[in-house]
Length: 425
Image (cartoon, rainbow, N blue to C red; front, side, top):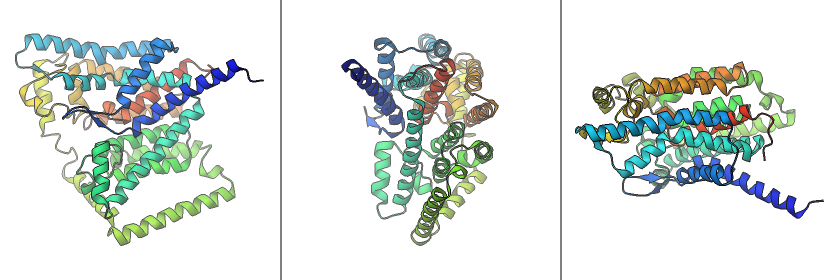
């Protein structure tokens, strides 16, 4: 018999589960909202920190001790060192000036990202089941791929201006990306979409998701047409071998009828897309490949060996070798402040030369801790190494949307590892 008390408990748990799930999904789906002339935020960037605070301090959710310890160490790199360097050099170095309130809020939100989203992921473990968690990941993969396909088809149609304007205004798509034959969809820029591809492929293999989701992840990276995607192909191939070897939900396990249906759908999609491309886009795929491989051959670093990144990084090290300059900037830096074209540049600005190395050693340990077996450990550690390499060209550990999700996933895995067998609502 269902009592009023049990029904109330079920409703309460369901509401908490739905709230947690929707917030996880919102990381990729929420559009940007302008809060000033120069600053825009996504609602989830406010809602998720507020949710984490409510869960911890009001609802008293249990955070595993290991997660608390990890957050404490990360606070050194995310809060303590940047604030110390901000105060010291603002007071004693006349070359530097404070970057302003809006820039400070934006950068603090970025610096706190590992802490907030690891906590968020840990809370998710106690709020939603593993099946619900995987369902949300599958929904994200499908939605992101559809967004990229719509951008691609829209740009090659008569609705080009309308489609591109929508993505630029609401999802901050780099406006020149489509004209350069690159279609990252909701993921702002091609490099971010490339990073999404390798991270989501790694997660899909670890979680043994269905084969068509693997295909959609790779399709998203292909449409983004970025160096990150093409350079990651060898690693993706290794992941795919592991997936085929271990697949439980893969194509080969479907019965004959399901296989025939999937084959028909797959071939039909390929035929329709091929006809569209050949007739209406004049071999657009060839244009995409010609463009990206031309860029790779001419300038694989996209100007980062010559532009402001190297100049600013060198000057910061000359001013403050050990702890960075925090939320301060010199005159030349102010003109492009917030354009973190390299994770190394970002780390040097906020942590100097020594603390970034310590941070990466600690992150390496986290990536080595969360796997369940040797194959998972290979996947997570090669992913970490790849992200470190990417860090020279993009701010890979603080990318919009993608790193938010990565830290949430890490938080979920950490809670799972430390609370194995626990009761999840």
